[in-house]
Length: 70
Image (cartoon, rainbow, N blue to C red; front, side):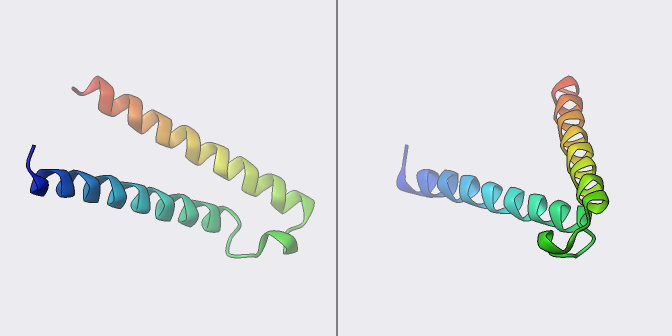
């Protein structure tokens, strides 16, 4: 394997991890509706937790769908 391929593979891994962190942070921010975690009421905290769980299930469903499409 040449050096260019190795660098390309490492860059792909790095960018994939960075994009996933950004997406997860955005989902978390949206589930809290832009409020800091300390300012949430117990009801809003539960709603944010449910939204994160639903997003997790959606990611799992997308992963399974991609696997079935192969």
